[in-house]
Image (cartoon, rainbow, N blue to C red):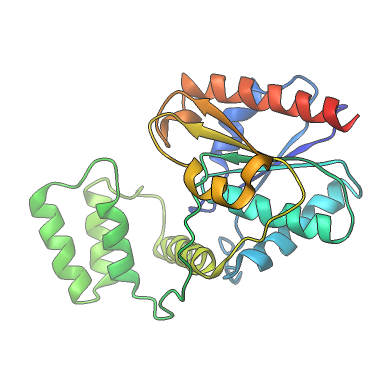
Length: 258
């Protein structure tokens, strides 16, 4: 494409599937890059601070686009990483044209996340957050395995129950969990500072993402409501409306900058 690119940052899970779903609904001629988390490759260590994530991803961004205007956005907690990327760009006097927060929540409750990482307990807690809970008898079995730290058996039972894809091996599941845990640590420790750039929050109508950002950004914040839930806005049919709203915001930002 011929336009300045849009860089989309991963949410808590570290993957950028939402970028692939969103891209077809964005402006024609717009290059779109998705930045996934470090830690999925064998031997790769997950990053444990938002600042380190932003600095690492910024190296990749500037390899593609050496100078501004920059456009960054992120879904869910990816918006917080995008915000810090903008902060670091502004710190070296680069022009940031667009910062998009796609249903990104920020609550001013910082502190230290636990350093100890119990894989079994962490996996069990993640299963409890799923849209559809496992059957009660399976849940009880997994709870007992988590208490005994029997990760291998727990993983086998998760595969049998269809809770984890059968083709994902134990080492990869461990890396996935490590990325989740590292991101949790990073979010807990991060306190965003106000930045001299406008923010656009694409807020799901079935939620309340605006509260924290309104306190931080004040009049620099523009809120664009998107019909749907936190998960629903990045899925059909709502993702089309999200893409149209992001496109309109990018056009407006370019016009304002010009």
